[in-house]
Length: 151
Image (cartoon, rainbow, N blue to C red; front, side):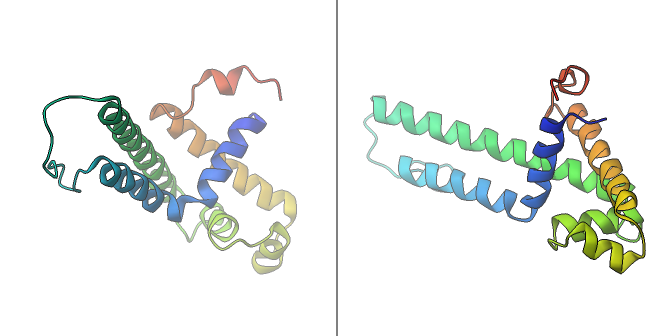
């Protein structure tokens, strides 16, 4: 059984996966613009060589945004891997796509696929559990979260 906190984290990421990379790239671009650095990483000029608090804060903002983008890319890799395991023509892949990308309800899926809600939940649980295992391998979830749960 997947702890509720891990389950919720993954479902939240799955629901936002289509906008995830764009948001992270936008945050990085804004941090660079605020620091006066172009998207190529070149300084926009005017630097005196003195590092001020403002410069340090801008550098921290850029590094933070870059780390967030790297983390997003890892999450996207997790989802691509699970999508390869459960392709769109599999029950698990189709149910996950309908729930997380097309915002269908479990009842809608039951009607569309001719199954019960417990079957849909089992398919989603399998998909999400696989995401959790791969996320652990990518360092996105601490494996202790799966074994020591208060849920």
